Amino acid sequence: MGAEGDIFGEVKRYHLTTFGCQMNEHDSERMKGMLESLGYTEAPERAEADLILFNTCSIRESADSRFIAHLGEAKRLKREQPGRVVGVGGCWAQSVKEEVFARFPFVDVAFGPGQVHKLAEFLTSDSLTAQGYFEFEGFTGHLPARRTRPFQGWLQISVGCNCACSYCIVPSTRGREVSRPLAELVAEVEAMSADGVREVTLLGQNVNSYGRDLRIDGRPASFSELLQAVDAIEGIERIRYTSPHPKDMREDVVRAHAELRSLCEHIHLPLQSGSSRILKAMRRTYDRQRYLDRVALIREHVPDVALTTDIIVGFPGESEEDFAETLEVVEEVRYDSAFTFIFSPRRGTSAAELTEGLVPHPVKVQRMERLLEAVQRHARERAQRFVGRTMEVLVEGPSRTDPERMRGRTRHNKVVNFSGLATPGELTQVRIDGASSQTLSGEESLLARVAG
Ligand code: SAH
Ligand code: SF4
Ligand code: F3S
Image 1 (cartoon, rainbow, N blue to C red):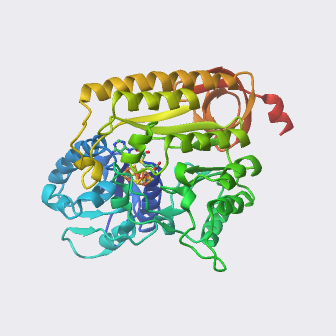
Image 2 (cartoon, rainbow, N blue to C red):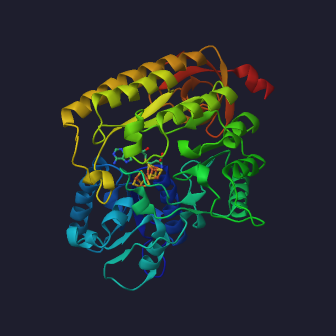
């Protein structure tokens, strides 16, 4: 307010709501960077914005309905002030394409994840007619970023996905897999480091297949090579990545966890189902044994690793025996944490066409409850191993439950609430004195602080 406007008047204000995964969070940081380079500033409330934006997700039906509920408010705000621009980007927009304008005529601009840069074109053009942009062409990684936390950065290593998991909408919303050149990624992380970033998270739908489509001196690049190159960059203290695919998780990447200083002791290895029969129907291209072999290899090289996963219950044809096999794998692996989902049929996916063996909703819910019981029990038990240890914590901000305390994350990706003097962005040592399934608690080790 009161800021100098450009020759057209007041400074324009945007409001952006992000749904979905870390890819979308990354894309949103880029959208914000791009808008701010166009002279827009962020409005704290949607009602105060000239430009109302949504970065959408369509992974499950619940994601669609959450977004549509928000869109209702945008409609009302636009009716009150028709000069407002309403924009819808991301995976949901891509999945419905031009249909968005028929269903929601108040939307001015819609664009898929590969066309974020077109938003700038639209905003700076004189045309007031609604526009949709749905090609697969750009990396949002090429746009300026406005990071939510100055010390944590995303690195988009590839876009798209060449897998064909039968339940999944992502290949149709993000297109074929394309890797960004290794040298370009290294330069980006060097710039991030110079800018104060200490923790970088490498993003791809299947990070292990990174580089297969690239050629360096005539040969493809590999994910482990990228990890090494990022580890060598001064100032980067922590590397994370998401997600690896169990079919492509090889020994070089597992070894990197043991050998590279900054690569964190956490691997998110999506299981989806513990039944080989269902895995086949899901087209995951690994079976139960191969998954368990990967886990054994990981634990052999990185015994203290934190393992997390994604599991879907109620896939069409999932019998009680199939589900029992999922529970068996969960009991065997003992995950540090897991995201659990009820199967949701998605338009255009082959699993949505299946008509046999559909699992009734109450059965899905009951399986979900049984699964959650096991997942939470292991999370609680596994977290106890940290009690009594002094662990490195990257401070993220004040604790959400007690503003007197701080909140940060261990290398194992466990949230820690602690008392101490450290400030956001600092790496400090915290002595852990309590653990629940979700969080750890502790006291900053002031001795380490004096020494450090
Ligand atoms: N590319 C990543 C993540 C994909 S989406 C990977 O393969 O690991 C994140 C998770 O959402 C998936 O791992 C899966 O567990 C879940 N998911 C995807 N499609 C789903 C659907 N149609 N119904 C329920 N869960 C789904
Ligand atoms: Fe979807 Fe499978 Fe690709 Fe993951 S690997 S994004 S679940 S198709
Ligand atoms: Fe992510 Fe949702 Fe798209 S999970 S890739 S934003 S469909």
